[in-house]
Image (cartoon, rainbow, N blue to C red; front, top):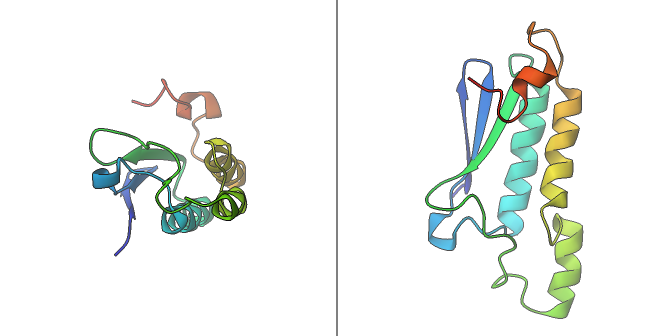
Length: 116
């Protein structure tokens, strides 16, 4: 079962983490599916903005410690994504850079706080 869903609303791709029972904690599957979703959004010439959100009451509680409980698992977590939010930010920053700017909207209008 997929834990990341994607929908499109006009020029916006909405990527949603769907693990509300775990407060959208990031496990190996979530990292892999987020990477696929970001890559797909970056390759879609219709997409001008990406909104990442979480299902339920939390965007994400962070790393799923139940999955990465041993020290060797924590070392692996750093290679899977990151123990903090930087890995996810880098992933979507890479997708952002690759998106074409042919929509007529400037990047400022697509940044947080500027979406209509």
